[in-house]
Image (tube, rainbow, N blue to C red; front, side, top):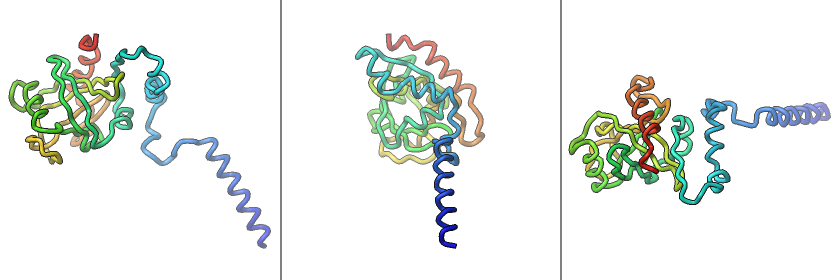
Length: 194
C-alpha cells in the first residue's frame, strides 16, 4: 500500500513538472492578459537593447496600458512633460488599476501643473510624456482636475488621471476616446525630443 502511494506521488510530481514546462507563466494571474504584441513591446525596451542605443538617444513610444502598468511603480517620482508647452513637472503614482492615478510631488509641481492648464484646474486632456528611464518616454494623456482622495501634502485636493494606450476609466470601464486622441497627438508630435 505504501509503495502505491509513493508511486502515485512520483507520477504526480513528474506530471506537475511537465505541466509547468508547458505553461511557464502563471495561469491564474492578471499577467495572462498580456498579448504577444505586449511582449514584443516589452522586449523592445529591454536593458540589453537600450544599452546598444546611443547614450543620449531617446525613444518615444505609445505602450499599451497593461505594459505601462507593469513598468510604472507606486510611490516613485516620475517626470511628466507637457507636449504643447514643454513644461516639466513631477508626479507619483498613488493608485489606479484601469489607468494610473497620480499626484504632484509637492506644491511647486502643483503650480507647474496649474500653469499647463492656464492657471486653474481643468478636465481638459493634455498630451504628455511619462519618463520611464533615461532613454524611454511613454505617450500619455493627463486630465488636470484633482478629484477623489489624495495622499501627498502638495496643495492638490485629490489625484489626477493619467491615461495610456487602451487604458479605461474607473467608473465606466471603457476606453476614453478623448484621452486616446491626446496619446496619438503625443506620439505624432514628439518633436520636443529632437
